[in-house]
Amino acid sequence: MNIDLSVGGIQDILSANLDVRAFIHDDGSGTNNVISTMAYIPKFKTSGWPQAALNSLEVGGFLIDVYKNSHPAATSIARGTAAPDTPGAMAATSRPGVSLWDDISWISARIAASNRTIAGRSCHLVTPFERFAAMSWIMKSGNWGNVRGNNNNGKDTRDADSWENYGIFDELQAEYRTLAGTGPASWWSGGVIGQGIHGLVGNIYEWEDLRLESGIFQPKAYLAGAIAQDDTYIDYDDNANGDGVDVCQLTPGIYTITDGVNGNEDVTVTHVLITGRFTGRLILASGITNGAGHGDNCLIQLKTAVTLINGAQEGDYLAIGAMLEDATGKYMALPDESDTTTHAATLLDQWYRYKAAASRALLRAGDWGRATKARTGLFVYTNNAPTITSRNLGFRSALSVGNL
Image 1 (cartoon, rainbow, N blue to C red):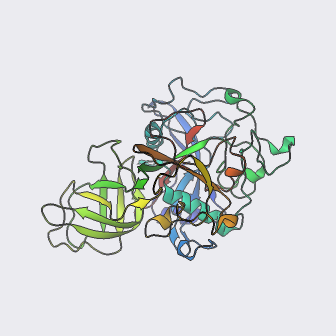
Image 2 (image 1 turned 135 degrees about the vertical axis):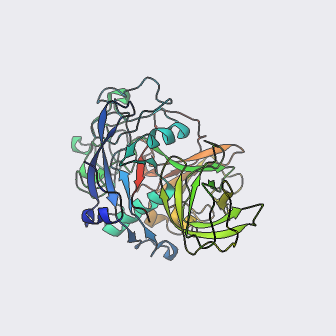
């Protein structure tokens, strides 16, 4: 079934637990429909984090896939495509009991995610802002620290080696990877089978819409049309730059509009409504102050880059201590590279930091062999280039709702 994606249309599905819904959509062929299952994360204020800066933040108001993504033709014994890194028009699906869409690069995962259209709006690769909201909901719901998954060759490292603690093995990677949606109740964010989000810990890594250049994250986009004085939102796109460096979905924070004609201007973004692969709408804290406004295709870029990796620190797993607290970083559930001890016992996860002169893309969740390194869904891995493919790399999609 489909739902009204307006703000008013989602009021009826708010509940104490994440509301799980099935959506019928085209598989990308133009002739066949498939069903994807997504969970609605309502708008709420964060609480419970050990760092005060991460609490009382307004997040949520979007749908996220219940399951790690699969090809629309996938079955329990087949991935569904012989060319996983060439998605074409095929749309990623969120379904239980099937093999996962692995061997896909960050670049192709973004395409496959946005190929899925629901009620006229494209889905997108999950962003760090959405990951933070999902983790914050678990924190708020009281299940923090209890979410488990396949991080020990078919089971969670904290569970006994007994059949009820295993998921169903994926015949394409037997005795290691498990099929989507399988495993005990603890593999669900709500701690009950069928309740909330599945597989946030382990099984295969999940690409996330964040690209690093030598350890720096400074997302940029371009104005999709001119804006005038007092306008309170900005539409953005990629200005035909496709998968160019740093062009990715934006997140709340302070941005600079670079306008060589009318002058530059800083704006504070409070909410982001993602409308496509490289398109979205930014909701501003106050109206545009430049009397002449700003022209189409002006660059908009995060004012202060987020430093995720500082210096030649690479090749080692570290505890996630404190998380970033700056204006943008606090919305992204990313580790503060300068502090790996303060809150390690509470956050219960680790990250692998890697600095190189080339591009890297963010991976989360861990895989079937991460053991104690992946325990809460905050796991961070920054070693892989956006073009890398592997049997343990996959993704998850999300969908913005409302018009803000």
